[in-house]
Image 1 (tube, rainbow over the protein chains, first blue to last red):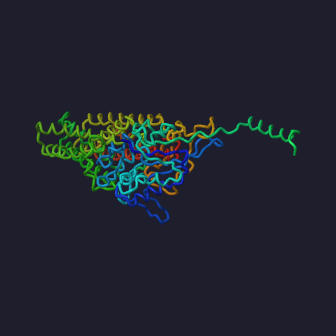
Image 2 (tube, chains in turn brown, orange):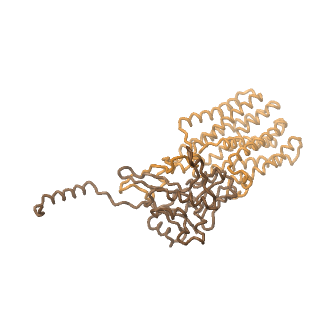
Image 3 (tube, rainbow over the protein chains, first blue to last red):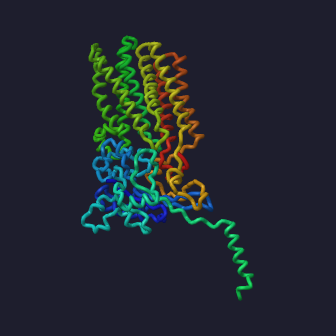
Length: 231
Length: 317
């Protein structure tokens, strides 16, 4: 079983609703505890938050495009953070979710150094490492209606750019979308086998070239001069 | 990588201590009588004290040290766990060796403990180096040059300390100066080889990291395969920017490399060739070498570029 997230880079508008929903869910979650804030109302606020959304420009103007790129833990099949952790706090479950056991973590930061994607983050108040839990306490919560048993970020996304599912099941929505749209993994050459996938933006329709524009303009001008059309 | 002084002091101090400990133990076994015995056991003791000081410093780096004892739990997969386990093994065995050596007891137990001490010291050196060398996201660390450098630099600083102690208890033998010099030249070659190799390595690019080669393209068929950061998504620093965002200008790095080479290698090697052998001078030279190695270790951190920087806008690692 390989539970993970699928992010559609074509649809993400970079609104950060996923980041806010994640922080809000973790505030009451018992898995890692709340994600601490440092000086939230002061001059230099900072804090722990997961699911970073960065904004990139690809291509060169005028053929450029803005790509909004949410990133949280990719729940790698061969996670580096699990391998390097000396206390065994970072561990991978049978369903694929990588978690940090808050009772074992000593805050050495080695998992943060080992993760190429920056998924692990030190909570300076609690002294332990925090990361995306794939809302493990939401997805297995029998008291929630089935449609709500998904990670908070997936439910919060207003453009439905995020999907949750089992990448090991070829019939799941995430597997089918990955196959159809050529979903890709990040930095696969490092060998950590990330499970999360990203769908590339769809190819936009070609912009009309200069020759075509000229032909259309001439047709339009010719129609103005045509005696067949009464004005 | 943000150069944390607690880790820099830990690696330099424990490296010097482990080098000193293993050299003292090996001299004891292989060259008995060449060095005054008072120097040998005091050298081994100093080595053990340096290792202890280094390890204590490393626990200052922990945000939740009450769980530090659990770091012995994953020797099967984690180099940090392996280092911790071997360090725990080192202290009683090396301590016993130092005690036997100080009492002047000659016998098989002392020889055996000396060899075991040297072997475990090398094990700790290699495991500590592999903590860094095993990290693939940091290409400047992920090279065989890292453990080679770490082992040689530890023995270099340890050899100078042993020479200083030997000088305090009689004139040190020529063989010690020659061995120290040989280690020093090898360590210098390894350091220069490391800098050469990392300057030639293949960086990971931002364009590759976000999938430009997987379809994340601009508009149109002939869109350039280029990417840059428009906005990082936060208006203040984060854990990632603080931990990995340290940037060192090349011109500053070059100056510091020069300082490390002069203090860490130039002056000590010159002293070994032409020095007068008084223990105060030898000790100062050993201290000079260690200051040079502190600079070298600071650079080891400051010049490292983690792949997460790509997602923060760096064009390449």
